[in-house]
Amino acid sequence: MIENQSDNIENKENDLSDQDNALGDSSPAQELAAENNEFSSHKIEEINTEELKNSISNNDARLEQLEKEHETLKNQYVRISADFDNFRKRQSRDQDDLKIQLVSKTLTSILPIVDNFERARQQLKPESEEAQALHRSYQGLYKQLVEVLKQQGVSPMRVVGQQFDPSLHEAVLREPSEEFKEDFIIEELQRGYHLEGKVLRHALVKVSMGPGKQNSQEQLEKDKVEVDIDSEENTSEDV
Image (cartoon, rainbow, N blue to C red; front, side, top):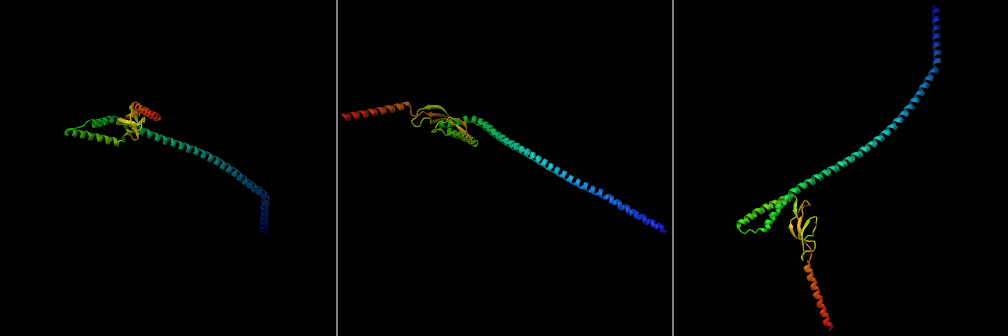
């Protein structure tokens, strides 16, 4: 019994000794492993830092490229927007011009009727009561027609006494005049009209040529007679 106990004690001592030897043998390996782990950790950190720098650099380049693309698209949008705005304005002007042309064509075909009413008013002198009633009747129609034209933007020209303007007037006759200077309108032969500031129909007019040749000759002869009289008076004074 005592021998068995002593054997157990020896065995335990041997186990403890083996464990101590094992611990002593494993310490350098663990230190090496720890050093390797630390080196690997530093290496990984360096790699991660380099990758992060590359990633930042790539992102900056990508951002710069996107900014350029954005600026290009912005310029294209501004240009397209300006082109569309110009197109819209041009279409609006074309539509307005077409509308004016159609209205002008229609109103121009009505103006001869207005001319006939005006001629009738100037030429007819109703005397009987029945004729006066008829005259008032068609003059009422004339006033209604003129009112409709005014509502459409039509206004008559006032040309007598104005200087001749080929953009507004059409000269049919030219004659000498003591009352009006040269190139001034003496008489309106056919009334002209404006439509919203534009010429709907040119006015047919008679234009002054200034004082006539006959009057000018008479003035020259008068001046000559006065000179002769003065000459005779001076001669008599000398005698």
